[in-house]
Length: 188
Image 1 (cartoon, rainbow, N blue to C red):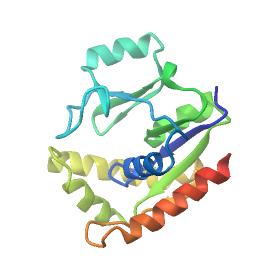
Image 2: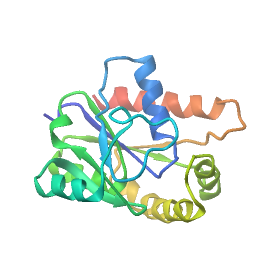
Image 3: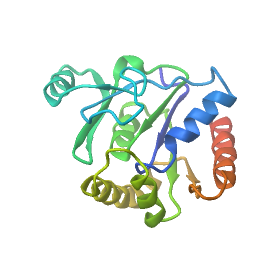
């Protein structure tokens, strides 16, 4: 089941999703991205069943008690989890470091790629560009990022530094993407 299971993790707004989407666009059918469950409300433009399955906390807790999740955790006051049934060969997960630790224990052959921001100020600016994140949630995510930056490298097989910001025409993102693509190719 874990022959080609890749876990991409890192702080919120570090660019994990964009790296994965770009990889899927440029190298279609290489990896599937399962739809995770969350208790947070949808952001502008997010589609139920495409970006996440949005459920209330009671439903999430019942699923957790039933052993539905391969990993699940709290992140910035909300719950997130990956369905166990969605894992298989050729899967790439986008999760946070606590979930990555759970996957590492459960699937020792999985490969872990951490995406890091250049600094917390850049990360804070990225978070402020997201819809419906109050200052409280931005600061909660920055607090989580500090933990992830300290603990994450111990989990990772590879670390990608994403220096991209909204003002550099994507040049830094393209550099980070090329590193990401090379890492994925080298893991298998």
